[in-house]
Image 1 (cartoon, rainbow, N blue to C red):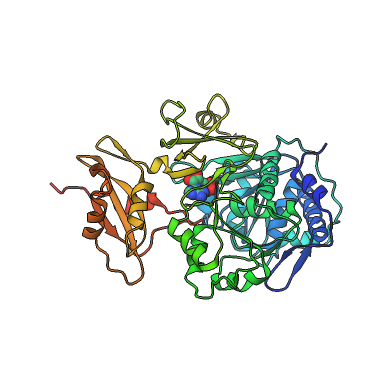
Image 2 (image 1 turned 45 degrees about the vertical axis):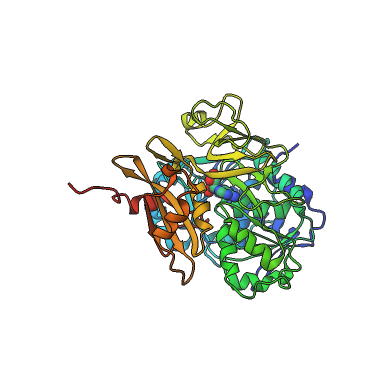
Length: 506
Ligand code: AMP
């Protein structure tokens, strides 16, 4: 049997006339249209020399043809390699050199620069712009619809996604057809997706959240999605009466809450709000429930593993927790140094295992070996704990752990306390080099609108609630925390910005 994701998706379609994608401009695409467009693009790819196993690198703006290019690549048996649209030519040089793609699809504005890079890599270059126009679609216009999906084993690669990598070189996570299909089917069942669902799709499609979670769950459910080029709070509020589900990063929810139009009535047809890719503040969770009557469902995943845990569909969606391991996925907490299993409620490394977990890092066998335990568990790099009910709680990336005077300080614990103080909107706790302590616990705080809370007030609330060694040495105020496109706070940027805070001038 052909285990290609494309083949399995196509076989799951029960009614090719149903709409799969609609756009605000009024365009619609049926499942049948989608298969035909994919076939045309797959024919173009093969005509350009793309063979099974070859990488197809794609750095284009979000558009319907860009999404179909993902399916066409997989249908042609090749490996889809999406790249963040923010990467510069200098950054692309690394990815192209590392992945050695056979074909690169890019925005027409970058064509010239990419052609120079690709000359060395001997890759074909095609264009696709934000409107879905360019040489790829020109060629597809005259290509036949029919394309026999290339035979793939479940273990063959469907995609390589580079990790965002704030330290060192970005690593290419190799994802197989089985990795992607198993996670899509698990999430579809767990989140009760059916053909009646209409998902608001406002995430980028170069990242696992928008590309795999949102798209694959929709496709394998026979559902449809309203495909938006980017997040726009007002547009999304306007669409809620005709949709049933939204998948977003926490920033989406924070921004939507700023609009008075967000009400119970407006969201009465919606059945599911999913959040992930960065921690959702418990406060945002509570405010959302109060305003809409819906409890946001928070889940936890990463590029390397697809989704690992999710709050339940029925049952408690616990603010600040990322839920239970998904069916078929095992999660455990270990001592980061020894790998020894830790008991309930103890903080350690989150390790996961299951059909969702990637095959390793592209051309980095040592890095791959270092991040797997001998019994197959992947060491996520996230610190967390499992409570008595089995819910997983994340306390941050292990590289963000603060070690002060020999003690471990888990930023999330301090951030939760600070965030609960009236007048605080949000905070980030970081470690900054300090002569006496190694690292000084430092709180970077964003005040709520027109609040005047100061450092002394924050420190006096924390004193008595937290052990002395966990108390921030300094509390700094900023207007906004630096975030990446997925809403993750970039603590490395803050560490750099305040690197000299504790430097004592001689
Ligand atoms: P990425 O590979 O870009 O998807 O980033 C994955 C990382 O995002 C994880 O290793 C976590 O550190 C973080 N992350 C994802 N989902 C959540 C969540 N619900 N809460 C807290 N952190 C999360």
